[in-house]
Length: 156
View 1: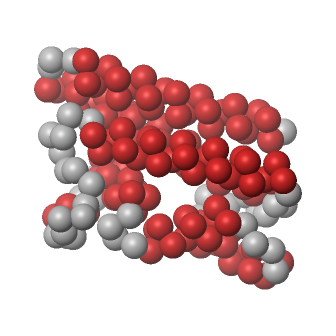
View 2: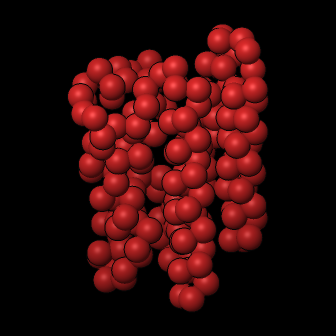
């Protein structure tokens, strides 16, 4: 699979998430908003996986969807992949958008306890009933990260 087709798949996931968020914000039905935001979370996590696949292909890594595994591979190969370093740091911080996206995903799709019940901080992204603000924020940050990676990797 070429990097262009992987990028296209990642873009499709991001666009689908964007559409679900827009629909949830336009809906007057509370039950529908929850379902659409859950669908958007799934698409965002899938887009993050797509980014990891793009990184793996670009830098000839294993293709793992685990940031720590990929980051360890880059250290072993003695190469620097800024997006992996950033993701590793984001996943390690409980107040980061990336960690919160993962926790929201786990809460929705794996019936795990949401991070909001574990982490108490004024710095956290909005929790539930925030009219899609959290999911929109995750989308914006993920798009920013994807674009930055693609720009950096085109120089590689």
